[in-house]
Image 1 (cartoon, rainbow, N blue to C red):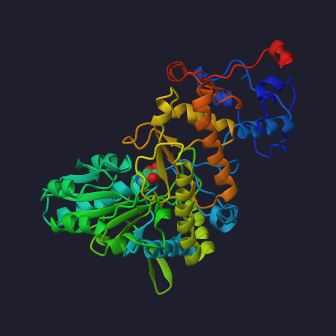
Image 2 (image 1 turned 90 degrees about the vertical axis):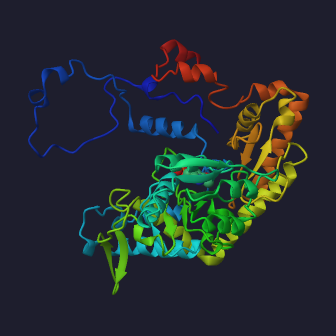
Image 3 (image 1 turned 180 degrees about the horizontal axis):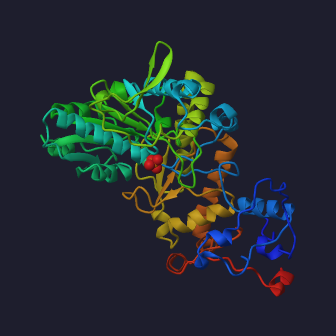
Length: 494
Ligand SMILES: *Cc1c(COP(=O)(O)O)cnc(C)c1O
């Protein structure tokens, strides 16, 4: 699979070899040396590799083969949802009429693009059960913050300036307390009960006249559906607070239940999770926010509207919290999400949820005999195993995660959530075949057996990857960030 012996670019460099050809210059040449101050002008030519077109192609292809991605293998990274990226999405996002428009073009010339964004808003409000949606936020956490700023604006408009606290269960995603803090609130942690769900009595005791909102991650980070949402809504609304739904992982409930119908006032979605936006390298993402009629006046501006078949950006929104993203967010991700929603249709989206939940439960039950399962009730789209049984035998969850690489699998999320010792958070997603799920399960079972019979093989893993076990301390403290080409001698040996 990995082409380990493919020499990298510096090593195949030969003086004078060229991999490109340029057309003749048809404008006057500029003398850069004359334009730049002396200190900025190089005395010697940079030591760049000189290679042919094939060399450079093979260099980058070899590098890409050293990475694991959804296009190369199973990627059960819980909470981060590396879902499949349909290739039709890419075809649509690259269409010239979309890809070549300029963000400063006149509205009259980009009506088609505005229609896509508007229609996406409409679909997302239908899917979430919310009155209005903004597409502006660029990530899930950005959506959380945007919604909290709207909730704050709402309370302030009502003269309710004392609402300084946001309640966040200890099973929430880590971005929730962070967003609340950045939005200027104090966070109050709500404890979980023995079933891993929000402890209703603890919630009741912490809600008061200073409560601005409760942020609920549902399913929570244990992959469990919060069973007492209507009661929570009653408690929080009863005290004048608002209810926020972290819907990053909507693939757990999509087309089965809607946050709007459960009494939530605001919800964010991650288009780069549930709605097949590719993610990696930190972006671009998209974290749309849906709100009730009551919160709609505070939506970020401009608001995308449709009047008599014409799409316009409305800036005349006096109560708006303002713009949260330049232009209108990450349009390329809207195209992908829109393509996905339209190609799946309502029944397709329903089957996504059914299969995501079925796959997670199938895997959980088959692995249950081999690993500890701290919360044994049915899960939603993901579940959390504990490696504490293996830890007693001297093998850590980290070792098992590394060992999975030898089987060609990306490991699950490890050591998260924090409330599970030696946690392994596994999200199979809806798109994998039963054969893939089974081969991952078989690998996990084999690793559990190795821990008992031959722990060294796990402790020293991975054995088959280009880079073997890293010294993590050294990698953090003394990283080698500069590539040193192999010597002639080393190359001959290889
Ligand atoms: C991923 C995730 C987030 C944060 O989304 P980003 O786009 O990474 O900011 C928030 N909540 C949950 C439950 C998530 O899984």
